[in-house]
Image (cartoon, rainbow, N blue to C red; front, top):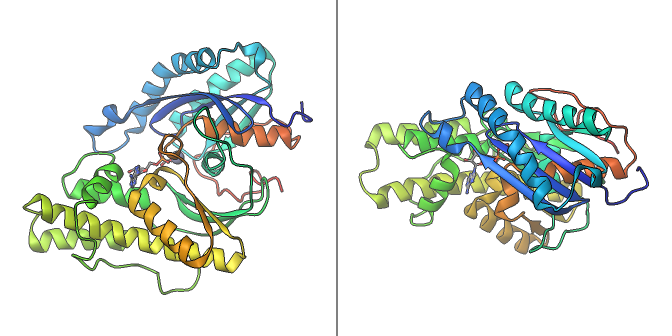
Length: 348
Ligand code: KG4
Ligand code: ZN
């Protein structure tokens, strides 16, 4: 199978609050099913790990069956199985890992464990019936999700070098926390994004932490506190316009820091392509700011369509397909945290 350039992979993902399964052929998505638990966790204002595990267990079989059925395939057509092995919530991860092991046991197919953020990296290359797959190209990746914010140099398949990461909150986490303190719902990112479109990004001068420091580290805890202090001092925004102004000013601060550091990474590495991936890649302010900077500085910016920004199994399948094509041996582990440039993840 190692000679197979475009292996057919059945992939499963259950690291956080989405239960997902997909069938891919290389980077081409044949089917992708995502069952979200957002409604389960919304009333708690965040993901409750114990509930996440239980709901994954309830959904994983049906989601897997649907992915195979929608691909119009049977297990016999699959070359390899893949599963997210971490980072994530341990009880949640175990659900898809055990399902993958069961399928591997029953079918004799190899099972590949995939690092969740490696999956997000591959989301930028996915194609489907409505979208052409993009051939792999060396790039700087800005990984922005609920749990991670980092810049990664990706020179080749399997070459992952972290240039810098957040020292405290991830960008998505900052969105979720600020939404909570403003009394908005969960997850906060899409809600703040929509409100920001109606507001003035220059209304409030929120801090741009670490922007002037050299290097590629981020910090968003101070920005969240600045919004909190603003609300304590002036009271909660008392009109939709006032609320939109806070959201737009917060979003401008997050986007500016991310884009300035990403552009610095482009300059430092000499790479001419920026891929923005992860849940926060859906953010319209970030997309616009990155595109404007790319146009100005002469680098290209690629962001996956919304359906592949959030957690999904197609990206896990594509990452596993690259491992199969590279002739790597199957192996699966479970870890709640592990850097993407750990020797267990890189393969170039
Ligand atoms: O990648 P993802 O689905 O899950 C993790 O691996 O964490 O990312 C989820 C995060 C949440 O924090 C959510 O608020 C954020 O992505 N998010 C957004 C937007 N859509 C989702 N943040 C900003 N703007 C958005 N439009
Ligand atoms: Zn994710």
